[in-house]
Amino acid sequence: MLPTRIYELVAAKGQLTAQQQDLHAAFAEALAAYRAQRWDQAVAGFQKVLHIIPTDGPAQVFIKRCETLRTAPLPPDWTASTNWKTK
Image 1 (cartoon, rainbow, N blue to C red):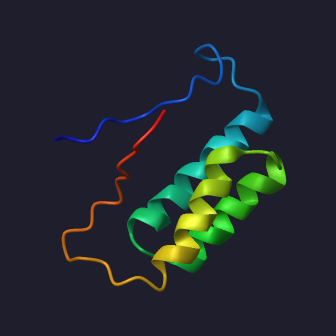
Image 2 (image 1 turned 90 degrees about the horizontal axis):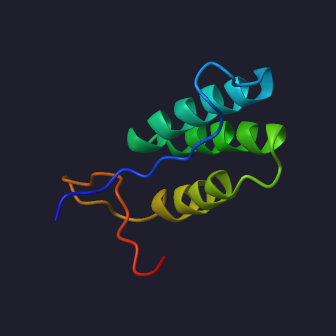
């Protein structure tokens, strides 16, 4: 089964606030570090997201994943995707 990307609608095109732009940039940078298995850099990036929006759920989830994955042996074909069992 191929992974499905999940997107979050944040604002209408061209109407992102400065805070939303900062949030998007921080999250994208942290996600790139996560996918590259640079756990410390990813955690720092997701913490930057939480500094902007303290209740950001995805950043909280990714920090927990980083903490788990940094000590877990990953297979060579690890793709950074997650299999969700529930909605």
